[in-house]
Image (tube, rainbow, N blue to C red; front, side, top):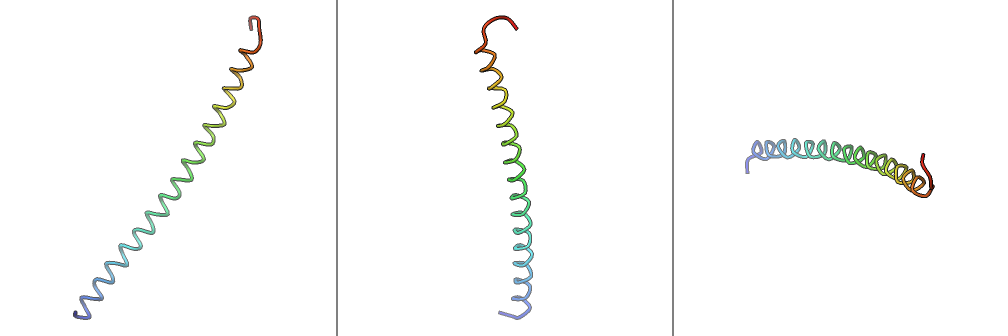
Length: 62
């Protein structure tokens, strides 16, 4: 194999590798955002469920 061919292939692989690393960082960041959102939603659901439970536990009109 010619040196120039090897160097060109190496440059291509480096670009692909860097692109893959960038994509992985973006996906990890998005994963953290989604996890945080789900935690907030879960907390809000729990509060609402507790409100409903306390309302159904009390007798009489509000």
